[in-house]
Image (spheres, rainbow, N blue to C red):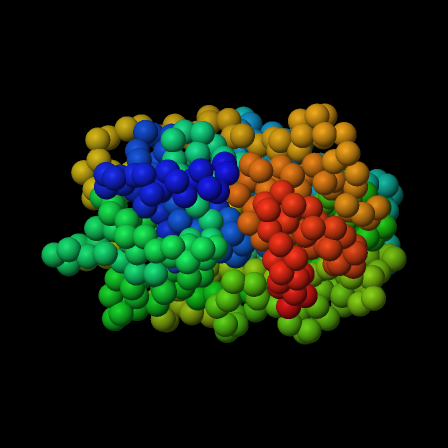
Length: 496
Ligand SMILES: Cc1cc2nc3c(=O)[nH]c(=O)nc-3n(C[C@H](O)[C@H](O)[C@H](O)COP(=O)(O)OP(=O)(O)OC[C@H]3O[C@@H](n4cnc5c(N)ncnc54)[C@H](O)[C@@H]3O)c2cc1C
């Protein structure tokens, strides 16, 4: 999946594309994969890097969403549990089962959460991962030794799944390309082509060399997450906003703050939010928040009060609790929540995570909302609609059992080029072979692409990333034939 090859294919393509997908996050990549695997001529254009926006900043759970049961959203949970089962099968090296403990500090909680989680298991049916069980206080502490012991009454044990979000995005991109699709990052859609008031293609600009493209298509699908409204307004400036973004942040801590291979789930903090502490790449991710009214941007920053909220809540639920100085990294993402009718606008945490599909008068299809977990189902619905609107030859969905190309080529590279086995830094679980794989096979163009999303260095350990960044930039420059100025600019970009 090398970028110059994709650009050359784009330039050579003379016919109208069956499908052009705008946006290369979870939703757009799943749509491109669905389209390409049904045999349609599919092009995906991502303005930044794959998954650079929300899709690399999730809690990294492939889950039904226990908390949605509280809101009675049974069909949403059931659908997500089915998709969880498929992803475990289709991307086994990236999506893995993860046990959780739900601590109970009141007897009532034990009964309440135990019942809810038993229902969660029933809804998963044959796709269930493992059994849910009630634990005594001592067994709860054995499973999760760093839980706060004060007032602990016991706990409930249940199973869900976790993943590496940005790596799954790359696996989907690679699989789409292997099925004949063309996916291109750093190429932004700047406008829509219209003929007789119908959308017939897009204008796009390559951010790397400034090249401009006029691309004709039978159908255009807008999958731009929190940027959905900006693309809808390219179609019709008077269209109402449909997205109501809400920011969620995570703090990343040393593994010592969990001391367990199981995650912790607090279904309702005293202000009604859900809190997760999960083991990930030998660190602990703690989150999240739900902050409305933030500006829409590609890489939002955590607010001080969000960090304080997480540190304060960690203190309530953990025996050995972190302080601000223990934070190795933070990351923030914006949920593309679909705005409910005005009368129902309240807390963003209460807005449904169901997805929505809109078709404008000009035929622009918009797929938005939803979750990482349900992106395959969202894609299936979007392509089914595109077939009708674009009068494409009908073809059945292939993705339910489609094995994704979820292995990186780093291991193979390290076998041949022994010198690339060297670690980037003692604190980071990556080698120079990972960087070579990113540059050669995964369309990584910038230092941030490599350090934030092909590897996850920047969200695992900021200090260690800063230490290794100059060598990584130099290695990339050598691979790509870039000069010292490129290295300086990339390092400067990382510092911003
Ligand atoms: C804090 C947080 C935690 C979450 N945790 C989970 C979780 O654990 N499990 C789960 O299932 N879900 C989770 N979610 C939800 C999930 O991450 C999102 O639903 C999903 O990532 C949205 O993907 P998307 O592709 O719709 O949007 P995005 O990832 O935002 O992708 C849209 C893309 O469109 C691109 N774009 C915008 N404009 C243009 C243009 N003009 N031309 C080309 N490209 C353009 C952007 O650059 C961007 O990459 C979480 C969300 C948040 C915020």
